[in-house]
Length: 509
Image (cartoon, rainbow, N blue to C red; front, side):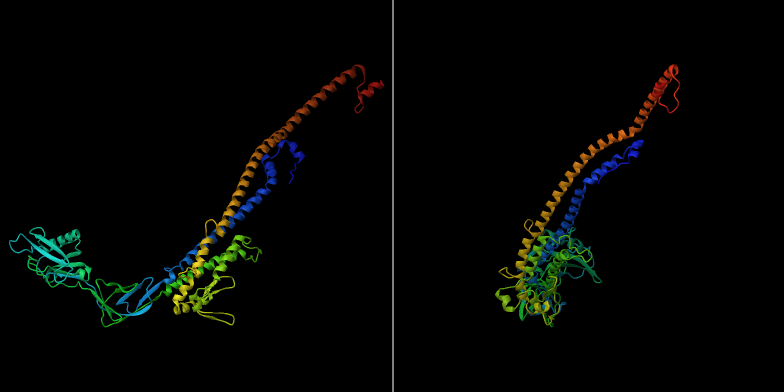
C-alpha cells in the first residue's frame, strides 16, 4: 500500500505525523506476521483438542484395565444373607459360587467376673486389722487353670477400696497386657467390682484362680459369665469361633454373626457381584463412547460453515480411530468362548451403533436384522463365561488385548496423540521463533525509519521560516536594485513610464 502526501499541507509548516507514517510503512510489511499469528492460534486450538482427547483416552485405559486380570472388577463376588439381623457376610475374590444354610446357635462373648454388693465403694475391702491381701485371676483357660495369671496385690490404704482397686487393676492390665478392664458399678443394692475381658470366646474367659488363697479380701465373687465361643452349623457341619467374625468355614467368605437364633436357618448365597460388574462394564462403555465422540466431532462438518473440526485433517487422529474400531470388533478364539458362544461384544449384549459408539442393552434386542441379548441376562446365566471373554489365563481376552493396545496408544513417545502433540508443539516453537525474529527486525527498522522521517519532518517544519527568509532577501535585493536605477535616470534621462522597459527608453533618447 502506497503512502501519499498533500504538497500544500506539507509546505504549510505543520510537517508530518512521523508515528503514523512509520506505522503505515511497517503495516504494509506485516502481512506475514498476521499469517503466522493466525497459524499459531490454529495450532494452539488443535493442541487443546489433542490434549482433551488424550485425557479421555487415559480414562478409557483405566476402565479397560479394570476389566482385565484375575483380580479385576469382573472377578467380584458377593455374599447375600436371607436374614441380615442374624448373619451378614462378605466374599473375597476366589469365593466359589453356591448356597449355604447357616444356623447361629450361640455368639462369642467376652468374660465377666463380678462381686456381690458392698455398701460403700470407698471402704476398705480387707479383713479387720489386715495390712494387705491378694486377688488372683486367670484369663483364658478352663475352670481357673491354664490361661494367663493376673495376680493383684492389695495394700491397705493404697488400693483396698473398690474405687482404688479398679484403678489399680486397669493400670496393671495396661502394663502386663492382661486385656482386662475393671469398673465400679452401682444400683439400689450397693456397689460391685466388675472385671471385663477385652477378648471374646474362650481366650476371654475370666475366673478366680483354682485353689485356696486366690481371694483374701472380704469380696465375694459370683460365678463367671461369658467367655464362650460362638457356635454355628454350616450345611449341617458344626463350627466354633472365638469371635463373632468367622473365617475359614466357607473358603474366601467371612461371616459376621449378629445375633443367635438356633431356630432360624439362614440362607447364604455366594455368587458374582452383578452390581460391581455392571458398573465396570458401563464405565468402560461410557469412557469408550467419550473418546469416539471426541473423534466424531473433529471429523463432522459444521452445518453452518461446512467445515470439520480443527483436527479434521489430522492423520494421527485417523490412525487412532482405526485402531480403536479394530479393538472393539475383537473376536475371541479361545475354546471356552467359542464353546459358550460368547465371542464378541454383541454376544454379551453390547451393541455397536452407526456412529461407532457402544450401547449396553438392558433388555434383549430382537429385530429382523439384529438380535442382541440383555447384558444382565448373559451375566446371570454365565458369569464365568463373561469374565473369560474379557480376561483369561492366557491374557488373550478382549480386555487383555485392548489394554495392551491402549498402553501403546498412550505411550509418552510413540502414542498417536502424544506424537501428534509433539509435532504440534514443534510447529508452534518454529512459528514463535519466526515471529520473534520478525518483530526484532521490525523494531530495528522502526528506529531507522523514525530517525529518517524525523529529519524529513524537521526540514518540512523549517520550510516556512526558510521561505520567509528567502522572501525577505529577495525583497531586499529588489528594493536595493530599484533605488540605484532611479538615480541614474534622473541625471541623464526622463523617468520611465510605468510598464515601459528602462533600457528601451534610454536607448531611444
